[in-house]
Length: 556
Image (tube, rainbow, N blue to C red; front, side, top):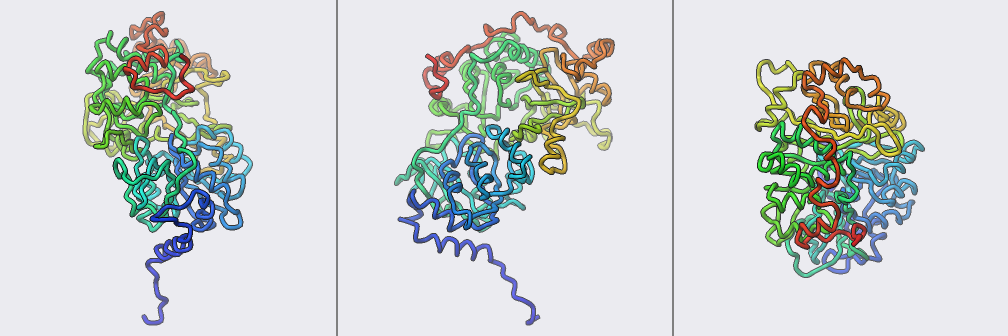
């Protein structure tokens, strides 16, 4: 036994202490590092090959630290493995252009989707996997734990305590995974103060604080101008409200990003009221504070909203509606993407959103060969959570109709989440919304992925709503009937043109496919007159002046 090599059980801790010791000379006081020394700090504490988390959320971005990381000496810092939720900024991909980073595991890359696709094709970026948010957060605590994390907060004090405020988002998950695996946490903040409104991240979990030259960037990702909502989007919203929301009595739900769901939100106080649905649907939401929710909130439709993140301009309105939003003792909302995604996966009865492509089987993806957007949280909210054990009326009703359910549980009843996709048959530049095979197959080949990146699998999808009608896929008896239902609502796409008219008539008789006429939706009413607010100014008026839209949305 005495000849066996000594096992070192605290090598991570010692390595971190050594990195911090070398950076000690850069500290001014407490944990504060001068702005001009930010690049030097990164060069000191980051080693080649490290897993690095650069906080890029759906909205909040550690943009200053991202720019600093792009400025490091590549002889000192290179071949990093980036593990971050979102690739949103140019700097996020500049890291790969410069050779500072070589591999990434992420969830969403909307603003950089085209550039990322080109980099993947050209071999500049290695993709580990395109994750859901919860999946990536989970791996932070398993095999993708950051060695160094670069985060963003509104305020810090000299001891390193952080106030993350309205846009807490991913910060708690990142910091806890990093710090409790002996990693290093560096925070950029908008200002350093003597006393924080509240402590969101304790100073013991933060190693260095840097005051950024300007406030961190926040994207108003969920803001939709009602003036841009089309009649087609309104029609799909009317069909969804009458044919799905009312049919299943959906109370607990998530709305994906988009004009279709914005239209639904703006029709609750009008068309929804007319249908007598107030109090019967849409009481509990898990979603960001969408400005288009304001009329429904003011009309008394909504009981509770928990948010993944904030939304620019909604701060005062949200703070003034503490019965609806999750507000702290300091008077401001705290968001949390990890908790929001958990609630979205387990506590909701319906997810409704859109996609780029749906294939002949009902699989869908927002990742194509030329556009790698990723998925964000849609696969978690758009999946039937097999761990769910509580029941609700809509969950049970959908489950009872799901005739293709597994027989492996015998005679035990099981509910099913409603997963709805609002799909235009032809999208931007006449790109078909329905295809025989997803472009994700080509992306998988380009990126060397083991499987094509699918956002929502067919066995989870229960309904498709197009301008043609609704396909109730949960009522289909087998895959052939399911494929026929998809063709029936796919319009004049190549896939839709394969629909058999006699087969479609039979599907309508069974209630598997319903046209607007079948569910009593008057197509002539599908226009902007049915919206509770028709432009941004009317949203401000509904909010009693509390909503302050970003300047790019102000046209009055």
